[in-house]
Amino acid sequence: MLDGVHNDRIRCGRLRERIATAEEAAALIEDGMTVGMSGFTRAGEAKAVPMALAARARQHPLKITLMTGASLGNDLDKTLTEAHVLARRIPFQSDPALRRAINRGEVMFIDQHLSETVEMLRTRQLPRVDVAVIEAVAITENGGIVPTTSVGNSASFAILAEKVIVEINLSQPAELEGLHDIYIPTYRPNRMPIPVVTPESRVGLPFIPIPPEKIAAIVVTEKLDSSSTILDPDDDTRAIAGHLSEFLLHEVRAGRLDHTLQPLQAGIGTIANAVLHGFIDTPFHDLKMYSEVLQDSTFDLFDAGKLRFASGSSITLSERKYQEVLPRLAEYKPRLMLRPQEISNHPEVVRRLGLICINTALEFDIYGNVNSTHVGGTQMMNGIGGSGDFARNAYLSVFVTKSIAKHGAISSVVPMVSHVDHTEHDVDILVTEVGLADLRGLAPRERAATIIANCVHADYQPLMRDYFARASARGGHTPHVLEEALSWHVRLAETGRMA
Image 1: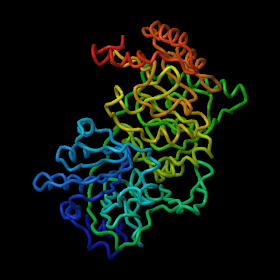
Image 2 (image 1 turned 90 degrees about the horizontal axis):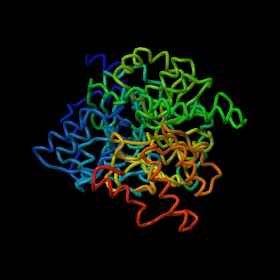
Image 3 (image 1 turned 180 degrees about the horizontal axis):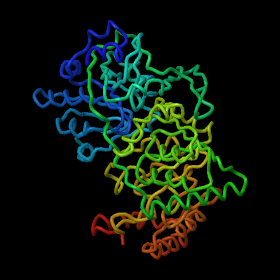
Image 4 (image 1 turned 90 degrees about the vertical axis):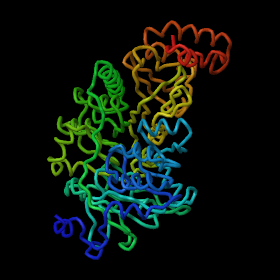
């Protein structure tokens, strides 16, 4: 087994002597360090070293600042949280145990736009990375690191870190090599434009370029990525997809789009995945994606002959779809590319390409402000992720959600959101299973009337119309009854229902 690893997966001969156990590698991480780990939405995370670090911390307590690309799989955030390793976590997470620790104030969580973390590292606005832990499919002859199923922030972590630990994962297919496009922006104040002009533009290297001497340890692993928890489309998500498809067909008829649309971006999760899946049953064709996470729907669209090319920062699939896609990776590979998240999410590129961006809201209000992160205004859910990078710079900024949650106890459309992640200025289209609100060119009072008529569940329509009528009577460019604006959230906290 190791001979094959030496020859095929670690091609820089002088690095083979640095093969170590996970425990030996984890010993390089000391109390108080800042650690950058690979991983983006449960894909491509380092798997052995963090578990060894947690085991060590149970015997010899230590705390670190952990930076990643996005959320981690294999219960790593849970394990590190329960071992009390995490002092600070940046920039995104989705683990229930870590979420509870964050909301208790035990872990300091910095919720950032995903395009910004390494920009702040590069300019020393955040503490430097002491150790980077990167999962790889191979190390090249010159010491370049070939990532696995995600790039995320791995490239800049490895470039900026004092030391690098590489996990060579034998369960990741060798066919991943050549899939990546590693481009690092030049430094300000003389930064050159990022030369991505189409989703399929290849502008970088197929590996992360670092000096071989920075690699302090290599750990061999064979653990699979965690599968996603995406659910199949249901009646509501199919209705949301139908409303959006009909709207886009209207844009085609109006001459603002053609049947190839603009490149698509979709956030992670069941609703966004279902909306993309809905494009299979439409007349749209020769589609392209420029997104951050490539989900099941990406490969469904490939197989249906609808999608020509997809660029992202990670591939995150359900267990069933992993079993279908990985054996066929060579077939999909010419139509796929994985980039650093600062490029997949870069505002310059998003604006240039003119993306149709579809992201998920926890709630939105009658004026089009969107809350993506905080339940009840105070309890962190996951984080803003890349939605802000895309929403402000999109050709069309679309937010989708079901109109109610918790069997009708919660309305996802409220008088005023309890936390604002995306202001009304960054939102063009809102969609629920009830209908679609096109907010372009509308003043606040017009937006409110449109949202109430098209997006609010029937059970909440009378309450919402009454609120807006009384608010309008008070006047103002954006009318509110301030003493009642958050009363639905207060009622939910007190009684378990908004109405």
